[in-house]
Amino acid sequence: MESFLFQATIYLGAAVIAVPLAARLGFGSVLGYLLAGIVIGPLTGLVGSETQDLQHFAEFGVVMMLFLIGLELDPRALWAMRQKLIGLGGLQISLTMAAVMVGAMALGYDWTTALAIGMIFALSSTAIVLQTLTEKGLMSTNGGRSTFSVLLTQDIAVIPMLAALPLLAVPTMMTLTENGSVHRAADDHHGSHATLSLVEGLPGWGVTLVTVGAVALVILAGIYLTRPVFRYIHHARLREMYTALALLMVVATAVLMSLVGLSPALGAFLAGVVLANSEFRHELESDLAPFKGLLLGLFFITVGAGINFDLFFNDPVYILGLTFAVMLIKWVILFGIANLFKITGKDRWLFTLGLAQAGEFGFVLIAFSRQQGVLSGALAGQLLLVIALSMLITPLLFIAYEWLSSRGGEAEDHEHDEVKETGAVIIAGIGRFGQIVNRLVQSAGFKTVVVDSNLGTVQMMRKFGFRGYFGDPTRPDLLNAAGLQEAAVLVVAIDDKASANKLVAYARKAQPDLHIIARARDRVHVYELYDAGANDIVREMFDSSLRAGRYALENLGLSEFEASEIEQAFYQHDRYALRELAQLWQPGVPVSDIPEYVKRANELNNDLETEFATRQQAAERKDIA
Image (cartoon, rainbow, N blue to C red; front, side, top):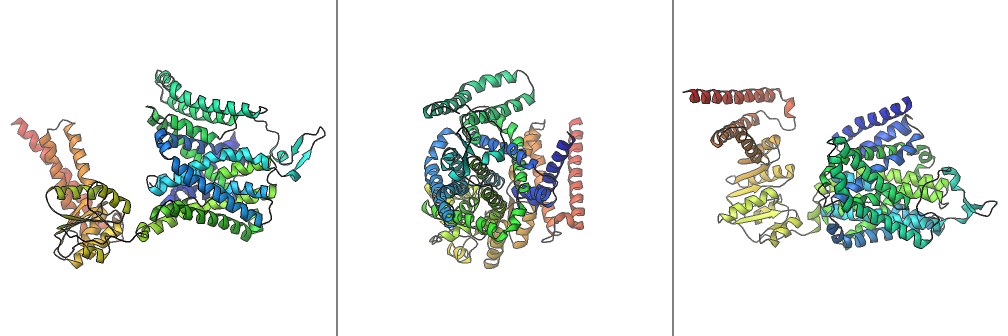
C-alpha cells in the first residue's frame, strides 16, 4: 500500500509541477505530461517497470475521450461526415500504409513485417491531437474537423488491422509443440495471461453474429435502458451515483467490445453517439470530464516514462532518422490529400502538421504483433521508441503551426480581392463584432467597405447578400484602395491584437482626420490602441457585462431606473479611470509591476465605492423625507 501511495505521489506531483509550467511557456499540457514522464522515468528512475502495466490502465482515458466525443456527435452529423471519413481518412491510411511498407522493404524487411509496420505508422495520436485541438479551440475550424475525420477513420481501422495481423505471422517465429499445435515464441514474453472472449473457438459466421449482437446491444441499451436507469438513480438523491453510473456505462461498453474482439475505444464512441440526443448528455459530460483529463494525462506520462533511452543512445542517428522519415512521409501524403480536398491556408498546416506523428494505438498493434509472432522483440522496441519520439515532437509541431498561422496562413494561398468600391465607413474584420457594426451602419443608409483576411467568412457574407473583400486589412495598398483618404470612419474589428495596433497606427499617420473606432480585448489592449491613435475604443465584453450587471441589480430589488443610474455611473467612472490609468501605463511592462499604476487604480476603486455609498445614503434620506 505504501509503495502504491508513493508511486501515486510521484505521478501526480510530476504532473502538477510540469503541466502548468509547460502551459505557461505556451507548449500545451501534452508536452508537459510527456516531459514529466521523461523526468520521473529515464532521467531520475523514480518509476520503473510498473509503468507498462499502468499504461494499460491509463489507456482507458482514450476510451473516455472517444465516448465524450461521441456525445457531441449527432448520428445524422456522423452520416454527413461519411465523405470525409471515407475520402480523407481512407486515403490517408491506405497511402501511408503503402509508402511505409515500401520504405520498410527497402530496409530489408519481408513484405509481411513491412505491411505490419505500415499499419502501425498509418495511425496518428487521437489522444494528443484532440486534446491539443480542444485546448487551442481549433476543433470548429475546417482543418480541425478534417483532422477529426481522419482520426475517427483511423480508430475504426484498428479493428480490421487487428483482424489481419495474425495472418501476417512470420513462420520462423513459430515452433511446433509435442502435440503438433502452433506455439509463437512471442507468447513467452507476455506470459500466460488468459483473456475472456465470447468469440474464441467460434466459426467465422458465429464470430460475425456475436459481434453484430454486441453492437446491437450497445445501441438498444442506449436507446431504451438509459432513461429507466437514470430515473432509478435519481431517487437516491446522491450526486456520486450519477458519476458511478457514467463510469459504469463506459466501462461496461468497453468490456463488452473487448469480449467480442472489437476496440473498446470504438465501442465507447458508438455508445456516445447513441446518447448524443439524450437529455442526460450534459450530465454525462460533466461527470466524466475530470476522469478523462486525469487518465489522459497519466497516459502521456507513461509514454514519456516508457521511452527507452538506452536503445536510443545505442544508435541515435538511426532512431532519429526513422522518426523523421516516418513523419516526413506522413506529412507529404497529408499535404497532397489536403490539396486534393482543397484544404487551404492555416487549415492545411493544421491538418498536415497535426497528423504527422504516430499514435497510441500503435502501441496496441505492436504488442499484438509481438504476441502473434509478426514482429521480433528488437524490432518492436525500435518501433515503440519511434512512436514515443514522434508523439514527443507533436506539441512542437503545433507551435510551428501557430507560428505559420501568425505569418499570414490563409492569405498566402489566395490572391487578395481587388477593392473597387469606397464608402464612408471602412470595417476591418467581419467576425461577430464587425458583423453587428456593419449591419447597423448599413441599415441607417450609410455605405460600408468590409475587408477581412478570412476567406471563408467573406464567402459566407456574400451568401447572405453582404458585400465584402478578401485581403489583409493591415496592407496599406488595400486600405488606400478601399478609400482610406476619403473615409470618415475606420472600424478596427480584427482579432489579432498586434495587427489591430499596427492598423490603427498606420491609419492615424496616413489620415490624421480619420475617426478610428477599435475593438479591444482587455484593458491593456485599450492602452495600446489609445497610444496608437484610436479615438473610440470598445472592449469586446464590457457593454454586455454592464447589461448583465444591470439585470442582476434589477433582480436584487432595485428599480429599472435605479439600476440604470448605477450602470451609467459605473460606465462614466470606468471611462474616466481608463483615461487616468492610460497616462501611467508603460508599454511592455505588466500593470502590476508599475507602482504608480497600482496606487492610482486603488485610489480610483476607493473613489467608486465612496461615490456609490454617498448615492445610497442620499437615496435613504430621500425615502425618509
